[in-house]
Image 1: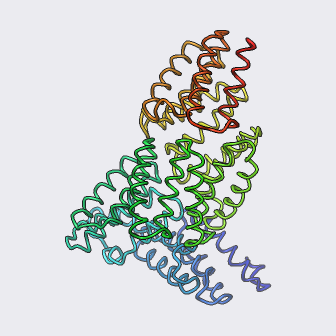
Image 2: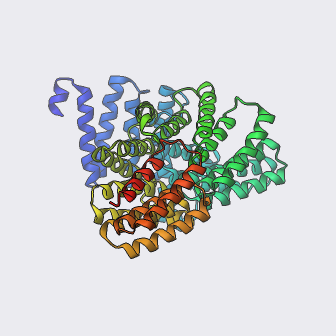
Image 3: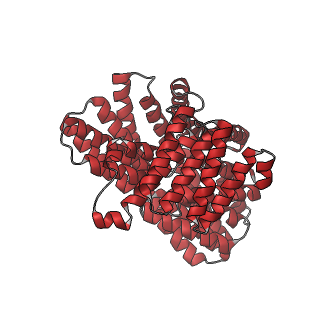
Amino acid sequence: LDIQKSVMNLSDACKSLHFMADLHSRETRYKEALTCYSEAQRLQEAIYGYFHEETANTLNRIGNVLARQGEFDLAMENHKEALRILKECCGENVKHPLVSQTLIQIGAVYYKERNSLATIQSKFDNYTTFIEGGMLEIIGRAHEDRGSYRMAIAFFEEKLQFLNDGETADDLEDIAETLNSLGMLSCRAGLYLEAIDYYDRALGIQMKLGCDDVQLAMARVLAGSVQYSLGHFNKALKLFQDALDTLYQEVGMEQETVAATLFHMGVVRAALCNYDDAMRNLQDALKIQSKLLGLEHPATFRTRREIGNLYAIYDTELDAAFDEYNDVIAGQKRIHGEKHPNVAETLHSIGCAQAKKGDLQAALRTLEDCYNMRLEFLGMDHPQQATTLHEIAKIQLKRGRLKKALHIIDAALTIRVESLSEQHIEVALAMATKASCLVARGSFAEANSLFLEALAIAKVSVGEKHPSISSIYVQMGIMHLRKCHFDEASAAIHTALDIYRQSELDDDHPGIKEAREELERVERAE
């Protein structure tokens, strides 16, 4: 530091002061840390002027130290001043990473102050005006943009408590809007039953106020998104279709809400294996989103990723899928940074495609990166984590790592049962994968029992003619083949092929190809 000051290398001197302050702060030497930060701020103002991002960054660091000392008023003053500087530098764009981070730090001080012993004992809230200024929602949105959905829920819940005292029509509209925001955030956090409760409460208020057809249509879209997540695909599709009919009639085709509805319909139809209709819905959604939102919008990238997922179903279109994924993940990183739930979701798609291509080692690395990235934002028990664990388990099964595969698929199964329900199609598919692991281990009786349980759940969940039923029958056929029960193996695989044919899938669908290959093995008595 002395050397840097002596040669007037003030920029590096500021970095050294920050480093020293961090060390002091870790050792709870807060007075020394504040001295270092204050000197760094003085040097930065000399180099850059007062209204500069570096000055704001140092003020935020000072605020963090003050909050650790319990000096919440002073901490808030520093963070607010940092926010004022950043708005001068970056404009009013709250999605700017530095602005968003400052808002999150303001929220952290707010919660530390609210939960401090002094506040609890005094029952006095120094931040009433802070709440009334609308900052709770702004901070909640900053957490949402960052991908911290549970933290966003906490701030919107706080806002809801504040609003519940209001009785005017405007207050009720704000409450309904906040409840819908909580529903959407709960859905992203994997809290589907909570989402249904929020949406129902919002709709009750809207009905009381006299909502119009467009509001009812949007309520159907929100409800449909939860029904899809819970595995009720046909119910979700009907809600989306009813909403779309209303939206077409009331607002026309080129509307963001129409694009969102088409997107959801495409995702549901993909789950139902109606791939052509799914692709039409997604491409229609993409066309509207590209025009209204632009090519660099999160919703646009999400739709492109789902289109990539449709390409990835067929081996001949894997290259097209990778082209989509690579463009999408590069764009998502430009918007969100290197780590975000949206980036992780695309990593999951890439990992699945790599596995289909046969590059199991690369697929395993990608899926593990996806899982670890999500931990920070979604935790261990989110349904999306179960989906990634399921894919990892299938790869470990292919590699012959049966102990690992069984351990991982058990974890995925537990998450799905607890977060979805015991009657969800994803639970059935996880059971079938576990049964295949047991087959590979030679535990045929246990595997057969698990296959039958999975089959019963799947039939209740998606009906007897869904291709997922075929997949389970093929795996049962492989079990019978390993036991040299050729008649049972042939019957199971023929049943699978019959269901596939009724689903009107193309002959090159990977499920049909696998069933035919296994049937040939049965006929050769292998």
